[in-house]
Amino acid sequence: MAEAFGTPQAGGQGSRIEGMRDMEPEARREAVVAAAGLEASDAEILAGAGALPLTMANGMIENVVGTFELPMGVATNFVVNGREYLVPMAVEEPSVVAAASYMAKLARAGGGFTASCTTPIMRAQVQILGLSDPHGARARLLAEREDLIARANAKDTVLVGLGGGCKDIEVHVFDDTPIGPMVVLHLLVDVRDAMGANTVNSMAEMLAPRVEEITGGTVRLRILSNLADRRVVTASVRIPAEALTTKSLKGADVARGIVEACALAIVDPYRAATHNKGIMNGIDPVVVATGNDWRAIEAGAHAWAAKDGRYTSLTRWEVAGDGALVGVLEMPMALGIVGGATRTHPAAQAALRLMKITSAQELAEVTAAVGLAQNMAALRALSTEGIQRGHMALHARNIAITAGAAGADIDRVAKAIVAAGDVSVARAKQVLEGA
Image 1 (cartoon, helix red, strand yellow):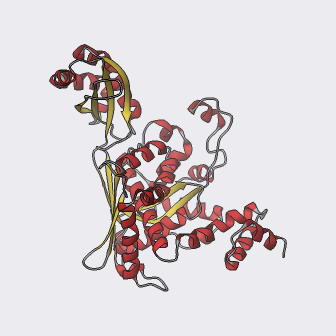
Image 2 (tube, one colour):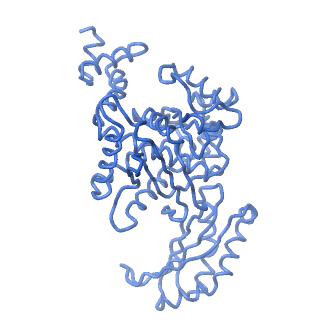
């Protein structure tokens, strides 16, 4: 059976939690903590109350006046590379966690998700101006390659000791820019389990004087690039057609509908923007929950989508010869499990313990699998009953709260307005008032 594909993480019992959607938050949390084998202290942190003390928040950013909370959900059913994962997701949008969990459940019929990640190479850029011979400057920089790499690595001997560090350089010449010829030196740095921004920025800063000596130019910008095109994750899934069968549609028809919906995103940037936003609906909540930089991930994803000169889909969906639905997501994924908020925010640390993540590459692989699952959920809805039906059913709780419902009335009002086909505040108020 499909369930045999997943191997529970040490100290846990897998990612399948029956009836989770029908539990109260406290019961859900208890079930998640038990499934992941977490300590009672992690349960308290995941509950959210006081997870980030004000004193700690005050040390993380400037001008702190308080903290801002998002709902923390846990996506279930995920199997990635044969391992079971419970995935924390910090997000405000209804349907995201439920959709990812359900698609992960369907994916189990084909063994779950497969994912791989390249070496965690980040780029630092050093901009050089005021050159009369930019191509000659490029040649001089390349001639000093070994010296530049050695100097960069002297900045972070700990990273080098872990197997990382500056591995190579590239030199790009821009002959015609608004300010004349420009040369840009790239440092290619293996940052191991860090996101890497501070590391590569420090190396670029340190090398600036030597670069000016070599080129005779003036260094301006010294900064990382968020287009992490050497740090790419690939996630794939293969689902037998019969696993996609619904009450009204054959699995083969659902698979074909998903492929046809993806085709529009491949050729049309107007659709691709929304299509890729749906992928990021799955990815961003995991990035936020683990204390990583979701803006960097977004920037890299959309730049990657346009890398061939036209903005297009980050995913490809196909029907295999045996009728199975096959999906692939490829994109940059610069995530870390050391440094920054990942190390200082207690909830981020609890989230990583919940997932039992041991490397930044593993985190990237699981996160990409969630993005692929979210994309499949959106395309499946669009190509079958339409996106609004399921989304609005889940959004009904928000509408009920807006109308003034509290406690048990939230579910009562939500179910009533969905049944009436009128998910609106006005209708919710009528139900609440007994009209």
